[in-house]
Length: 395
Figure 1 (spheres, rainbow, N blue to C red):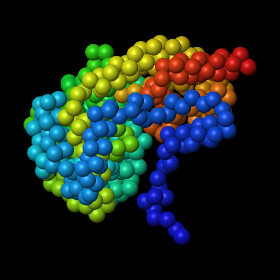
Figure 2 (tube, rainbow, N blue to C red):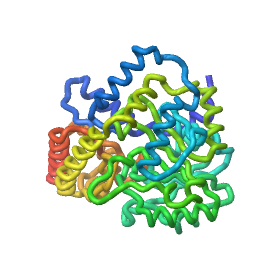
Figure 3 (cartoon, rainbow, N blue to C red):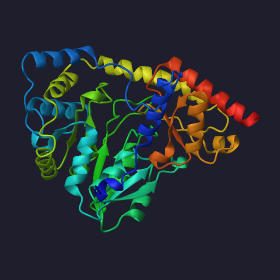
Figure 4 (cartoon, rainbow, N blue to C red):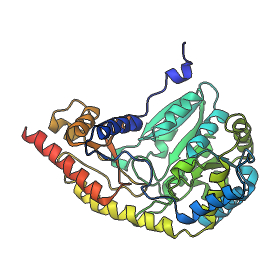
C-alpha cells in the first residue's frame, strides 16, 4: 500500500536513531553511556505520585473536558500570574497530551498549504516536521554561533514574506541552552507585530536556568505581544513528568477554541490521572524543582570545564535546559571522519558513548549531549570522548 505523502516526507528523529543503536549495544552486554536523554533523571516528586494514586482510588478515571479539567486550568492561570504576571482566562487555555501535542495541534489549526513558519536554527527536531505535517513550509534562520545561536530582528525582516504565518521562539533552547534577554525579545516582538507574525513561545525549559540567567516570556513585555503570542509549556521538564504527557497552550481564544475542537476528534482529552497529578504539581511544594535545578547546574559547572578540554571541541556555556551543544567540526577533521554523523557513530562503536549529531537540529557542525544523568556517568563519558580524540590524533 502506498503511504500518504505527508508521512513520506518526514525526517526520522536522529535522537531516536542514536538511542536505538545504543540500546542494541547495551543488549549485547556493552557498557554504553547514553547522553541523548531529553528528560530529567529524577523521579516525579512524591506528592505528585500520591495525588495520582488518590485520583485513581477516588475513581477519577473517566473522560474529562477535551480542553482539560477546570481545576487544572485554574492552576495554570495561577502559575502564569504568579511567575510572569500574566492574566489568562480558562477559555484561552487548552491542556494537551504533552507540549509536543500542543504544538502539533496548534500548527494544524493555523496553517494552510504553503503558509510559512520561521524556525531559528539550531531547532528542536520536531518543529519543522510538525510544520510539514500541517502542509506548511519551514523557513530557517540561522542562529549564528557568534551570536550565541540566537537570531536577530534583521534576520526576521529578511525572511518575512506575505506567506509568513508564525515564528517559533524556544527560550531556554533545546538544543543550545541559550536564553533570549528581555531586550532581544522586545526587538523581535516589534518585527512580529509590524509583519503580523504569530509568535509561538516554547517555554518548556523555563524553570531550568543557571547562574545570573532567568527566563522571560515575550508575552509579558506588553499587552500587544501577549495578544500576538501563543505560549507552549507543560510539567514535563519542570516537574520531571515527561511520561505523564501533560502540556498546554495559552493565547488567542479563537485559536485555542479551534485547537480544542480538533483535539475532540483526536485525543478526546488528556489522561485524567495525569491531569490530577499536574494539579498537585502546581499546588504543592516547589522545593523539589529547586533541588533538581541545582543538581543540573552543578553538573554543568563541572562537566563544561572538562568538555572544553577535549581536542577540537568548542562550546558556549549554556544558560538553561540540560544540554551541551559543542561545535566539533575541528574534532571531526582532526580525527579523519567525513562528517559529524560518522564521528558520532565511531564514538558509539569504539567508546560506547551515545551523543546526538547536530544534523537533526539543523546544525551540521555540532553534537548535543544531555547532562540529565549522574555526574559519575558524565565524567566517565567525557573521559571516553577525550581518549577517543587522543587515540585518533595519535593514530
